[in-house]
View 1 (cartoon, helix red, strand yellow):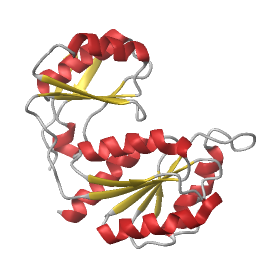
View 2 (cartoon, one colour):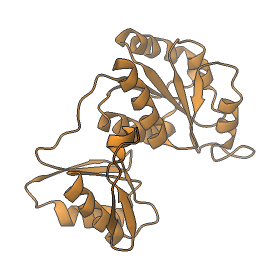
View 3 (tube, one colour):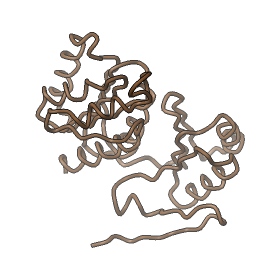
View 4 (cartoon, helix red, strand yellow):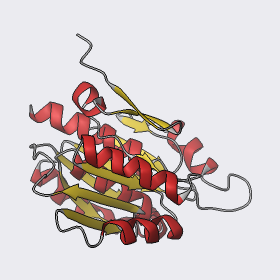
Length: 236
């Protein structure tokens, strides 16, 4: 059955789907790119009034300054900023995200892929998952992947996110080594033909390794949400 749906208007700027998490299991995130600082502040206030939390992604320096100025002295609020992920999480005390038993692994090929991996990590954690991460394991030094990957399998991760730029080979390699779903995230690194993540996306889509799913370029949010849905449903 279709779960309850409620739309709340924030002036003429946005319509909030405040029951999305109830209906789909995915936390709603305020995508801050291309919004003015005041727009982000208004939407954040509406989230805090209706949900007791707000997750702001891809924020700008001006947006961050305004949010901190607005909320830093409010004793009933907690503000956590992940500079790598470009995500700010504001919660109204004593709210906490519900803990579930899904477990997600996250791997990056290079250090340039870490910001997108961190975005996926924050989203998966916000959806109640435990996250095990290991970074900078690309195929240029393929020997580095085996021990971290083995440990993830031993700890019982239900799904693994693999972020890779350049030619994007690593997700297919990982999918060929494990018996659990792998989500590939192409990263917008690289140059010349196939630059800006196009080469990585093409490689992942053309992979002959079964069990590899692929999200859009730099889509850490989509990878984290999908991985959490899979992991939580498996554990459930």
